[in-house]
Image 1 (cartoon, rainbow, N blue to C red):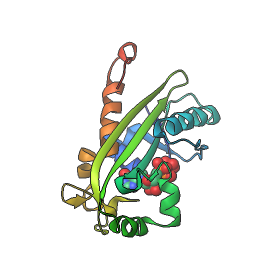
Image 2: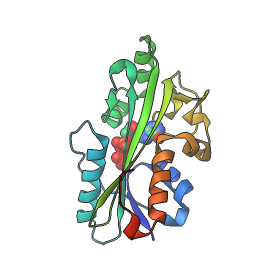
Image 3: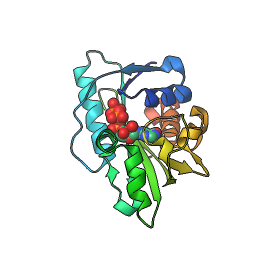
Length: 188
Ligand code: ITT
């Protein structure tokens, strides 16, 4: 079964393909409306349903809504991470965090899967520290997000998936997909 991954972000697609297999993931560029919410699960679930309704086919869709939560800023930019990356930029997020006493942060993502009947969400999070940019890999905030001594931009896609928010969410999603449809109930 091919999953339509609704995203404009090539980095997310690379990580999903590395986890689920190249042939399993088809990238679909559809710009769903991001509802205003401080809950990533809400944003992802609405996006998945809207994309499914608008795309003219009954293949299931997957949406990924992610954010960087900086402890010193009570979780900001969180759901506004894409806007902040596009305006002030990731280097400035580092500079602002560097002025604080606390450099702790976490990344969180929620995958929402919708097949026309039920919405399922899978979340993953990873703790880290905000550091001066290092590394050429990854995308987005990866150069300033350090976990276990390495920034996510210093990791291969496989290494990043092994520890990352998205890797954790993809693992839950893959486990769920592998179960029989009748057994796919219950909390995750
Ligand atoms: P789509 O909505 O089209 O999927 P996007 O990049 O706008 O793409 P998000 O709103 O989920 O997706 O992304 C929030 C921000 O966090 C955005 O600036 C991303 O570049 C960044 N981001 C998401 N996942 C990341 C990761 O694994 N590592 C570093 N930055 C990430």
